[in-house]
Structure formats: C-alpha cells, structure tokens
Amino acid sequence: MKMFNEKLSFLMIITNTSNSDLASAIPVSESCVSRWRTGKRNLPKNSFNNSVIINYFYKKIITDKLEYKFSDIELFKKSKDFKVSLTEWLFDKNIKLDNENINLKITNSTYYYGDDGKRQAVIRFLNNIKDKTNQTLLLFSDESMSWMLEEKFACTWSKLLIKVLKNGNKIKIIHTIAREYNEMFEAVSKWIPLYFTGMIEPFYYPKLRDRIIRRTIFICSSDAIISNSIGNSTDDMLNIYVTDKMAVSSLRKEFYNYLGLCTPLMNITTKSRKEKINELCSLDNANIVIDSYSLSFISTPKDIIFKALTETNNDKLISPLLQRKETLLNNLKDYIILDIINVTDIFNKTIPYSFVAGTYYTRDDYIKHLENIITMLKQYENYNVILKQDILNSFSIYVKENTELIIEKNDSNTMLISHEHNIVNAFWEHYLINNIEQKNKVIDKLQNIMNTMHLNN
Image 1 (spheres, rainbow, N blue to C red):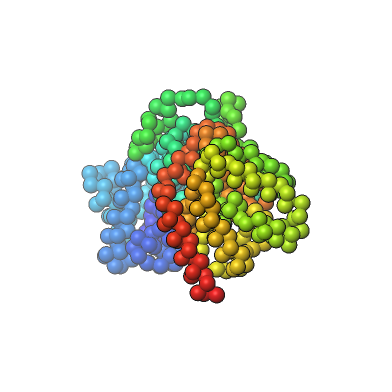
Image 2: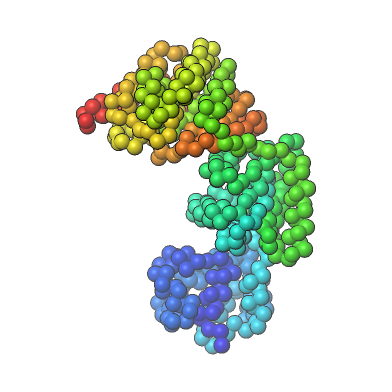
C-alpha cells in the first residue's frame, strides 16, 4: 500500500522539490526529509510541520497548475476544496495512492507553466544531459529573460551548464539581438566565461523581426523544451517538455533551418600575444571604454612595462606594446577614453599586470602606477577614470563606440571579437550608465589609497 512516504515523494517529484528545498521550508534537516521519503521515519507528528508541508505543496501545485495530476484520484474527484483534500490524502494512513498509472504521470510530465515552470523544465533538461558526453545542445530563445533572473536558479543553471561542457558536450546558441540594451548586456555577459571554453558557437539572426510571437527551443539528443509567448507576457506561458524521438528530430530540423539564416555573433579566436596586441592597436580614432581586470595598460609607466616584460622573457613584446600605448595616448587628443580599473588599498603580492601573464606588482610599482594615473588625469582632458573594487577575474573588455567589442582573456591567447552593432552598443551603454566622477574626486581617492599603502608598509 502506498502510504505517506510514497505520497510525499510523488508531491516532491511533480513539483520539482529537492530534499533541501523542503527541509528549508519547514525547517528540518535534509536527512529527516530523506528518511520520510524512504519510509525509515514515520509520518511527522508535529501539527505545525504538517501545516507548513501542506501550504508549501499547495502553493506549488496551484502556481504551476498541477491540479490535473490528481484528477484520477477518487478523493479529489469528490471534493471542491483542493487544499482540504490534499491534507487528508497526504496524512491519512488509510488513503493510498490509488491510481496504478500514477508513476507514468510522474516520469512523463509534459507541461510546465510560466517562468517557474520554465525553470523546472530547464533544470530537468540539464540534469538529463549533464552526465552524457559528446553531444551538441541547440539553444534558441527570443522570449523574455525574466525566467533566468531568479538568483538561486541562475546559480543552479550555471553549475549544471559548466558540468555539461566539462563532459565534452558542445552548444550552438542563437542569441536574440533585438532586445533592450541592458537585457542584451545581461544575456551576453553571462555567457562570456563559457565562450572561452571553446565549446560554444554563438549566432544571431541579422534581420529585424516584429517579436510579437516569441519562441524558445532547447534541444539535446533525446529531449527538447519548446514554448511560445506574446510579447513580454510569460506569466501563464505553456512550456512543453518533449521526449518523443520523432518530435525531437523534427524540432532539430527546425532549429538547423533557422540556423542556416543566421550569422556568427562573435569571432572566438586564438592568437599569439603579438597578434593580440596588433588587434588591440586597431582601437583608435574613436571614443573607447577599457574595462581592465587590474590596473589598465594605457596608464602603465614605460619603465614598468620594460621591467615586467624583461623579467618574464617577453622582450619581443616591448616594441608592439609601446606602440599600442602610443596609439591609445594619441587617441586622447581627439577622443575620449573611459578607463575602468580595479583598485585596492590592501596590497598583496598577487595583483597581476594586465598586459602580461604570470607576473605581479611590487608595492612600489603599484604605487608608481597609481601616481601615473593621477598625472594622466591632470594632463589629458579626454582621459576619465572609474574606480571599481571587484573580485579580480581574468577578462579585460574593450569597446570602440559603434564599431567593435573585444574581450580578452589575459591568461590565455583567446579573444572574443564582435562587430555586431547591437552587441557593441549594449556594452557601450552599460558602461556609460556609470556616473563618471569629477576628476578631482578620483584623484583624491587614488591619493588616499596610496597614503593607506604607505602607512601599511
């Protein structure tokens, strides 16, 4: 007879509830929930816990429109109050899970609703492929990105996707560029670390679409998710999880037909260090944003460049790097450079140079570099600085207004280059949203950082 433990498991499966989710909601330990599900622990006697359990599942079932899952259970046929029936069904030891086909409903759940439903479907989709190898995922969506913004889901999604890629799977993704610039920036920036794995091919459709009827297609070898919505309205959209082989095959053909109309979004290229420098030297004769993961190259004193390159046996890079620096400085005569730099007032020996891998600032050189930034702020009217204190990553981003986006991975020879107008402008607009402080305030902050470093020496 199917009693409490099996009924609880049924509820958790259809609502995509993990042991940790339910444990946090009650709250009890995950091991306690696990023992309830396996039948090693009896039905909870605490009436407050029971009420919390019912309220939790009732809300999930109503929100995700899962009432149909209970349509063949006799108790629910007779009652008009779903919550009362749910309580009686779950906790009454004499009521069994009386539909013999109920397991079929659990394993072949097809329909998910709204943003929360899409999140459940995507987690199921990625869980299904995360342990497989040598497959290609096909991803397209021009629907609202609201379903991706929930923080807990975004973390889970990212971890699963990284595992998928680590197992040797690849992704072909068609981005939608006809979005608001802030939405486009969020969409592309989330993928940047994954692009550098070399396992992702990004594309876009270059022509305008009215985007009234929007569509999502996610496909792997055996499963697919499809959905449609009108405009940005996704509250009640139907997400269909497809496992039928012929249907998945048909959707794959649809995706590749659309892909045939698309263009690569970014050129993901591996170049020698000298070739990378030559590429970056093309960033002139325009307004430029430079977002460095450390202090930027443009403000690096020449003697520090000589020292760092000589110590790392990169003498052959001295000439092209100095040429790049000269190009950027000449650009300041007629155009603006917004230099976004990562600063800290707590010096440590692992602060890297942004122009050569594997070597780090000394305290004196770091302070000397900050002093040179102050000198440049005073010398060049078109030179502006934004100070940030982010966790150091390994990316530097360059945006040439209306023309080019370059993303450089400083510890490798890989670059992402895009000339697509909407992508370039999305990054440009993102950086210009920052309120540029008056130069005297930036200078004061830099001076305070140097003073702190001197005191802590």
